[in-house]
Amino acid sequence: MIAKLFEQLKIVWKVLCRPSVHYSLGFLTIGGFIAGVIFWGGFNTALELTNREQFCIGCHEMENNVYQELQTTIHFTNRSGVRATCPDCHVPHNWTDKIARKMQASKEVWGKIFGTINTREKFEAKRRHLAENEWNRLKANDSLECRNCHNFDYMDFTRQSKRASQMHSTSLASGEKTCIDCHKGIAHQLPDMAGVEGF
Image (cartoon, rainbow, N blue to C red; front, side, top):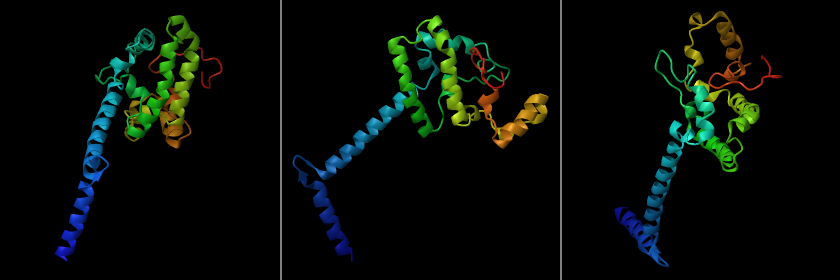
């Protein structure tokens, strides 16, 4: 039995060491594994570097418009010292959703290249469209980014206003509404809200 196992190991060893034109299968396997680790490390590093506030406000369109608005909100500075950055609200935390969002965001690079919102006037002209895109995305994923920090199971309704308590314990609890349905403009100025439900 041991002899048979030893024979099989010798056969596997020969296959791994046998050259396939120039390199052995073992070399190609190990080399491929190492190259994969290097690629994955580089990819993940790039992903994390583009998932920081400094990257987000690296272009003047974001720094001079929405970032200025964020600085006046409770998500930027508050009594508890917990601060939400751009990726906290605009990029999901789990990996597969994050990759999908990054692919969607790659479309936004075209806006940067072609100067779609490179002035305050252009930004204001597109504000409603941009806001609606974000609202629709958040509605579609059940306000996933909000729920990364705000957990319904731990909400203390006794410490909320009467209206908030009522809405959270009914509409949110039943799944009829999600965070973004009521909390539009929580971190940025609202566009013209004519025709938007609830406004």
